[in-house]
Image 1 (cartoon, rainbow over the protein chains, first blue to last red):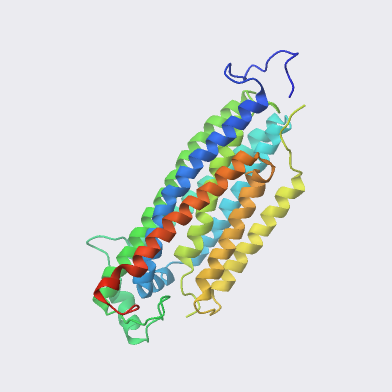
Image 2: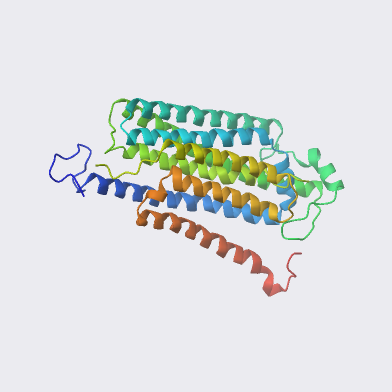
Length: 244
Length: 102
């Protein structure tokens, strides 16, 4: 395509002919990795789906006990961080070293804000005994009221009314999934922030230009993937049966 | 010289705005009783948001066919995961003649 008649870019590995071939291979490899990530989270999402169909009433009650506001703020924060990440990739594509660094720092800050709000939310669940385990307490708080009212129709169409004991047991399943799914999501963000620090340092050192910025681009793909996971988690965990 | 597609700033801002509006619609729709359509609407909006992120933020719109195929393949694999598991869920009681939905 180009580049055979002038000096090789210093970042060109010997097993690639051109920078664009190297870039293409990198993008493809990253997407193959993301494919495994999609299936990793896919396993959690199908587990969520099955339990939601079995214990819809518990999922509705447990989801309604979660504050929407922090979740919505985090949605805005995380999508905002995807924007700053995309702008950082764009800056690296156009040789803007300072802008690349600044947008990366903005992404780190927004990612940290997200995790901070998550810590607040987790602390809140510990306080309300909504963490699965021996001290889990749901039925006494919401159960009496939940059992007295008519049951929410399950998505399968059948109606079941759960007693306090059943609600106490089955809401733990919702909260187990809540902690596993948001926990693994948060873990991905922590890994992402560590990578962002490394990339920011590399960008600051002037390692990237319009021809070579694969690390920024790959970090971007990873970060956006994590954003997409949250885009699905938010309605599934925070917004079940809100209209009742 | 560079074969990399550089999207204009306006594209990113437009997509970001669209994602914000869709997030607001998701929350709003959750408070409207749509019956069994509530989760369908929620997932449709999430799917649309994910598509925008994939196409524009992740540049798949401007990627090679091989990359596009890999992206679609990941969704295909998840579809298999969901279809086979739900098939088991829906049919497991058949042999014992347990009426469905009870």
